[in-house]
Image 1 (cartoon, rainbow, N blue to C red):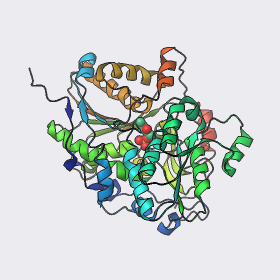
Image 2 (image 1 turned 60 degrees about the horizontal axis):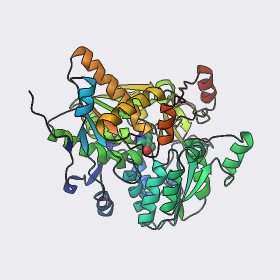
Image 3 (image 1 turned 135 degrees about the horizontal axis):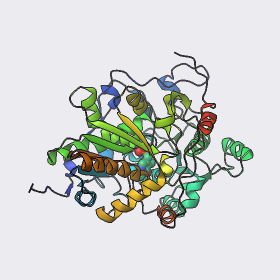
Image 4 (image 1 turned 135 degrees about the vertical axis):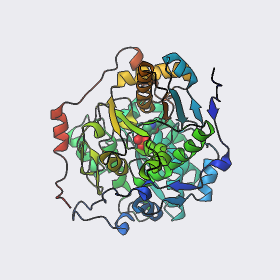
Length: 459
Ligand SMILES: *Cc1c(COP(=O)(O)O)cnc(C)c1O
């Protein structure tokens, strides 16, 4: 019998990366530039300065540097909860009877319960350094809002969070945590902003979406010279910060003497998947290896699998620059599934380009009942109750492991367990009492979303 390796590889704080890995620096073909929605011309660096802290704008537009140094202060904060563990799912493998080896990188070991803190602390650090006096943001499921509230508390930075209304109702404790850390939390759409009032006038029962909350958060800080807006996913800078996940992962996989055949991650805005893949995507872009990448999304919000690769607004209120990405149209209102962190109409421009060019091999849409079936099985065998978002990746990792059982292939599968589901009991309850439903948008519904895409002539 083959000797069994360790259950977990944890690393030491010395092994926390000292640089972020910039995937864009390794891409021969770069993502298309952001466009100014009025002039339809590429956005200049300075045009972003009123929105984000300047250093973050530079990171956003940096397509040349392969590595960017992590400030010592930010690294020190990481030391309180990182490196995150890599765990071999021996028990799940046994339960499935698969010859596949399944590993997961667990990002839920901090109060925010997800990977979002990795970027939150960096964004607040750069904002503080520049003298910014207040921040605004949106949150879907609440993980990002919590992470940012933690980072803002650490740096004494006032914060307003627009929380997607349906999530605020489903997760009152999330709101309470953010408030505990001193953030002001407003359900979106709200009466606080013009965009919110317009959306409510149109549809008083609107349950909100990330796109809507983004518009409100931007409006709140727009035009205030010492206020900034921050975003928890989608942006290039967020993928950059999340690259610490992938850099740690590579070291941990080496400790197991393993290289993945298959890398699986859920994709909301794409930041955790971008981070998870970083080192292995670098290998693929530089021709060193060819791991197979799968992005998993909800069948109810299928940006990759049924969306268009087009220029679109990043928000519902159409106030952001245009980004070239896989999108369902900024007017698409996703159904109220429980994986709030995956209810977004678009996708990271970097991941979109990588998918378009075939470097991300596959995207898969899965139904939430199948996702929770996988989540329940995982929880039973692996001692962590997974977040609904993360469970999308679990579903596909399990499906692939079951395929291996049929073919006898012993593939090495890695996925990101992006967070825990301790605040998602409403969702688990609805799965257990049988009231959870699946929703797949019709082609007509998708067409209505595509009709909201801006008309942009070929550049
Ligand atoms: C926000 C979130 C996601 C999705 O966001 P990405 O930017 O695509 O990573 C996934 N899992 C959890 C637990 C989250 O909080």
